[in-house]
Image (cartoon, rainbow, N blue to C red; front, top):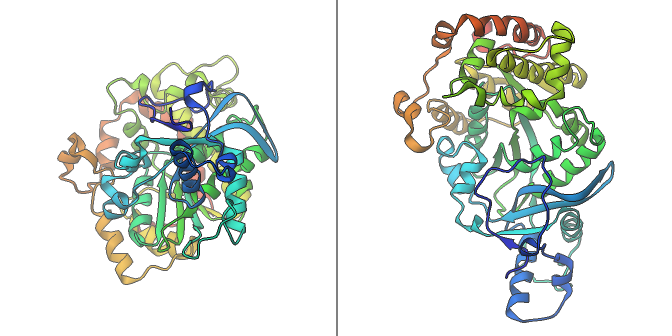
Length: 433
């Protein structure tokens, strides 16, 4: 048994659930194997695994809690980290074919085996290593190159189905050599949501502290050509955006949103609407419950998937709206429109994220924008679009049912209109023409 090495899970985990630690999943004790001079084959394997974390040869790909974990404003215990070697080149070479971090992982053969360590211990050792002039083992290699700490330039929050994948793809295309983009990776979302969306399990500060450690590990690169770091988070993290803002109070961010009917049609375009992402949170979301009480009173309960979907989306947009006001300019909102790429190139990248956009970058981004953003696998939607981006807003409006229109108007439209009227909304090319 290789202690600390494991096969990845084949089923999608519930990140909020605790996991028991068993013998086969014992953790790699990094500090012990680094200082122990035992040279047998097993110890050498473990020491190389520990060194791969220190040198950023492997990347953080997952975190999870074990039974009895604790989390406080400035510490935590019982949180497990998983590392493996991620092949970012597949994403850099063809962003639309690898639009999500899970797609990148699927093309990373070395992630068949993962290294499992205690997160807090790993962070402490990594920071010691980065701050020192020699490795933790006490030996210094003259050829040793310390990992680059990438500069977090900006992050994307979103309502869902509103151009966020295009945003991630274009952040790659701006400068594939220099930019690392995590599109809906697991660890930051787990950190932002670990206290619950109403922070009933721990404080905003505790979540922010954990998030700082997670992002620090994910910002380390062994590619000396990489300089910049970007994240596109899962839509549900918009409910706990405060955690990010506490953790990174000077980092610019954007919130993407879309016309109510258009985003609801995209969300509910599944074989069973009860399984749509915007419907599944109805049983365990305190924000959904409190939102409905404010709108309809204590005795009302949404009675259709369309209503639940509208409420779910409204809570995301309402949280974003509050954070936009509180951030006072560090965050901006952008509404999905056919010319969204022009908003990225003309305003968001150069003026908000402060990333220069030269002619070559402009060409690369426009080429990506002309491709369907989720072009992976050659599925039905890709074939229907011929691999190209085709605006579909008008079609969605025409096909929407009366029930969907009523739910959108009651629950989602008011917040959408407030976002549109906000002084923190980017006025798109479409609006100013």
